[in-house]
Image 1 (cartoon, one colour):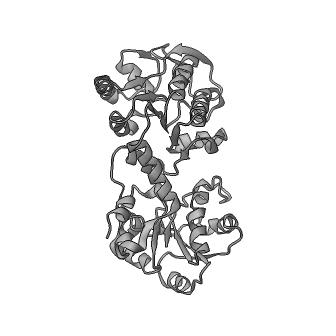
Image 2 (cartoon, one colour; image 1 turned 90 degrees about the vertical axis):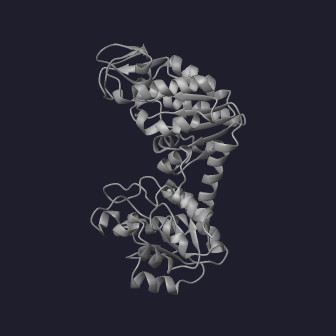
Image 3 (tube, helix red, strand yellow; image 1 turned 120 degrees about the vertical axis):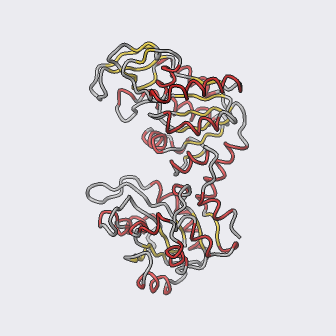
Length: 386
């Protein structure tokens, strides 16, 4: 039984628009099939509110999964527990694959219900967790199920193993200088990871909307840029802590500013701490690009979580793309680079650079919590179980 993360985006026609997560689990599935095992796959898809819903059915993934496995037929059970699932699982022959219906059609999954986990566990002999993207949730299929398997019958899949190895390398074996590039909209979302990185990193680059809360903390004028007023003191505290520990915080010296949040907005360049009233920073400026790229290029370890601006709009993409290229260049000279968090991953995929960094994590929230120093239930269930 493999817990995979097939929570992929579907369009209006229920076609998969990004199969990264599915492709990431293929090596684990293929290894088990090659070694003579049969595979039962379980996953969630979306956030169904009221039980079974057609648009959240995993049946929409069956054909593509079969294609990814090189034409291996994929059986589908229209439930994840119950008679049909039990019968089909019981009749599986070596080399066969069964995909169960969406786990979240049952409220018990997210509640971490033991009875539900036990019913799932009865379908297989060995439990493999290959879903790093959900490892931070103590759900029935990601953590609770493990207790129904003895120590030698529960393990990580290849994806989960490489995720944990890469994260551990950055957290505990980082070569110095170690730069953490932290972007995104809100300081509040990244506070814990920033706190934890003060103990590890030599340099922290802060970009994206959250940079303006720091600019405000330093007494700058930020126009109508994004700012979390209730986090200004937090930002001041963080800057003071960094100074005390000798960690260098890099804020963008200039910004690409716009008169509105719009792809067609008028744009200009401004010092980040002196943005005119009525204007907002939506990307890092040319000086900040040069400043950040120089720091990245001399680093031995790079962690990147969060974009430098609103990269979805072409006018505000340059900062994120420049940082991505600097990470790639540094990697080509021997640095270890880990990119994680939904938007950073989207960015490296958009620019076609995913193959040129050391590791791209499939787990946004899970990776964030790992670097915040939290114990992830999906990992603990395997490593600490008997």
